[in-house]
Length: 206
Image 1 (tube, one colour):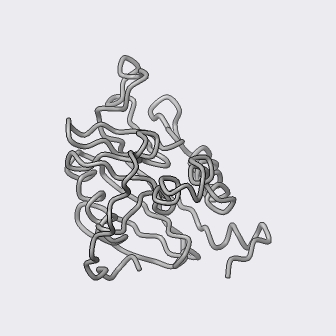
Image 2: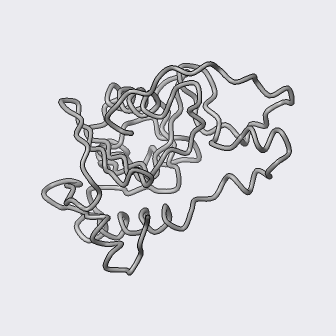
């Protein structure tokens, strides 16, 4: 899924009811990117709360990655932000990252506020796609968001995709996709291995 381009899709009809701002996940090129499942909320099939939370698998993976990062990160040099940390690229683009590692020389203490970060993280990590990608396609969304983050100054982006059980490692020079039971470097030789961790925990994902 992560290495092949999806075929273009015919746009679905836009919901007739007004879409609440709380269903906007990101802004890309001045257009709202809604949360996955937003159509069910607008049609009354689900509540906003039902589509907002992460699955237990996603939560376990994010927690594992944060713990791994915490084992080697220098707290005097970096900030590690989680929980859909927002980044403000420009007036037309606001994106979110599940985990973002910022150099404190870039995201200085003076820049910590109630607003999105307006400087790039060194590394961004995403666990699955939380956006509705029907019109963009999943691959189109991944590559478009990845390119925008690179243009903003991010040095490395890691996508963990739980359905195909792969990890996509992107740098400005190349994009590589590996099975999630392989060691993947985060930074400075420090790695994670999702498959091995899940096996250790007795977690089996079909």
